[in-house]
Length: 211
Image 1 (cartoon, rainbow, N blue to C red):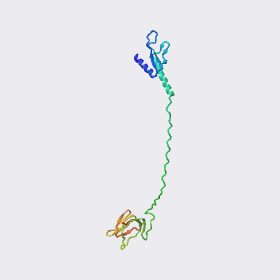
Image 2 (image 1 turned 90 degrees about the vertical axis):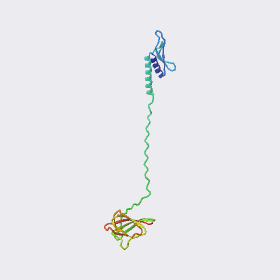
Image 3 (image 1 turned 90 degrees about the horizontal axis):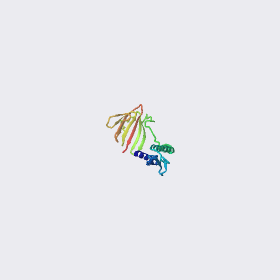
Image 4 (image 1 turned 180 degrees about the vertical axis):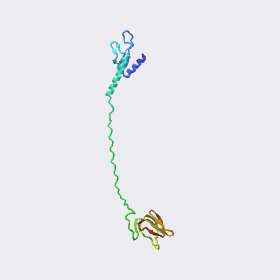
């Protein structure tokens, strides 16, 4: 009985009530009966004109029913979670247009708009700076006379871009040049262009290095 009383008392305490049990032993009395009072001592359940009236099962049923009733009321009256509207995505920033160029490079081509150069070689300066000069030379069948070699007081680097040619430097044998071949002629060296192609232009790029 003590375990049963402790269990009922715990259930009542959980509901905020106090379990009352009669201990009067007399004929027709309420011995072993239970009642429930609230925290203020007001009779809530199991009280009659002749004393306590509820047995353990009635107390248990009352307390369980009260729990279900309170739970249902709580569910009905407790507001659910508020639905928070999803924030609208921020608009994507417009791409910044690239700045307008302030400079337009001039592009030229060494192999376009070539002069005919049938009577004599064509020389064109492409760049002049202190200590350097770059020129394009177009040949077509020309050659340097044997008795009039070319010679200058500065180094000259030459590359054949197109065509075919032969060149001889003093104290050396003739070398044949094709597109992409290049060589360096030192200052003071006599040299001869021994021949250039007659059926097509031969285009040279010469870099004169002074100092």
